Length: 120
Image (cartoon, rainbow, N blue to C red):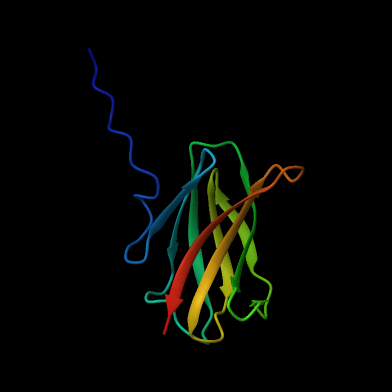
């Protein structure tokens, strides 16, 4: 009998600190910022892993609900491996509570996963 290697938890291969896992509606996504703590007024990226789903990551955005605005720049998203992505060009231009928004698809019926983050 051969022992199988233990399966890693979602996002275990992503760097710390700042790594987080979001799960909702049967979807699970892990992400880790390239800079931690998240900076104000400086661009950063996110390494992203989708776990246990055939869905694709369609878009990454951020918004600040209390001020009713989003990012001033478009995020560049690219797939780096099956189920792995890199989002570059996020820039949180003021301190406060932001939401990181991850749209997963198929495009005909996208679903959104959200994580709130506070930046100083």
